[in-house]
Length: 466
Figure 1: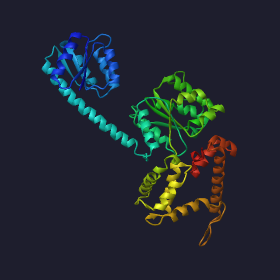
Figure 2 (figure 1 turned 180 degrees about the vertical axis):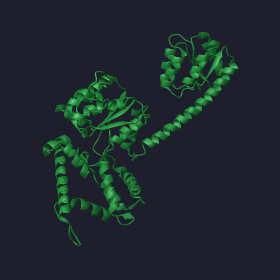
Figure 3 (figure 1 turned 120 degrees about the horizontal axis):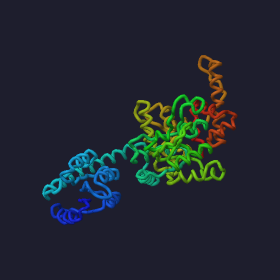
Figure 4 (figure 1 turned 60 degrees about the vertical axis):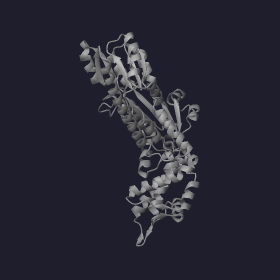
């Protein structure tokens, strides 16, 4: 067991350092007469019990207790105090100290208190360990895969969760970048507040500044009340900037200033507001190329890219595809309120051979379609081929003839228009790599109009991004 004693009376320190190892088996005692040095020691070492005096120069015991518990909330602390300082000792217990003992004390009384404190510490540490294990299980429950790339990803997430560094999560569309961000936040010390997320391409440029930094009532037309903004909402939490590559250059400058200063100024306000926000950001684009094109600030890139996490594509983790398929098969069964389908061996082999350019999201949707079009309890190769044929045999403009005649003119017209619109938008996204702003410009539409079409037809621009 490891015990630390902090007291400015050096004779007492030396006496306790000699006596306690005789009274307590396998006891390692570390002593400090300087509270500042003891605090630094706690930052790098976990103690089973800390014994500290209330009255000390440089830093009194109350302040030291507060700082120790900030560094290690599981610390078990016993305060030592003179008779005249009982009120202070009671205050210390309210702040989180385990117990106090008054000076001068008998060694047997002190040893008894220390034993009880160490028993308490053991229970606290065990409870914290169990909570951490449960937390990790729940955080990783949406991840599937045991391949080496996935194991490295899990280890990276756990390591980064213990830091406050800005993290840039890079990977192809459909590889779970947002899941990684949520896992990093969920394992961090900020997990007690919810992760705040903004999809950067989904917010029009003229509203993005207000959405991020807030605004005061009357600061612009339509500002009918104060809006605190996502930075302030994420104070002491994490802010996920999803698809950061699409943020306009005009906003990049203000975002960089907010990250550098850890301050934001709402639109229409004359005062800056301090914030403590950890930044997580995602992209599936080549930011280095955008820097060369002058469409992304290099200094913002380095501010966001303190640490990089790369999510593997399905091509890199093909050995995990059977696990992922079974996971989605069970998930779809749950969505439909039925039993999971059996998958034949040739179906699993065919799924494992494919490249899946849309990655996990594409595979998930394909499994959904196979389950829907499978009439029996098993999905066989005929079902897979049928789904493939349906995807490649769409002919926009054809009139559906029902057994009692053709469909109504209005229905046929609406369907054909929707089919044309979907085909057109998908072609534009293919040419612009899913960039909504470029696609809107190419189509001669406003960004808002295109976003409404995308939402109505359930088109995912991310699946067109390289």
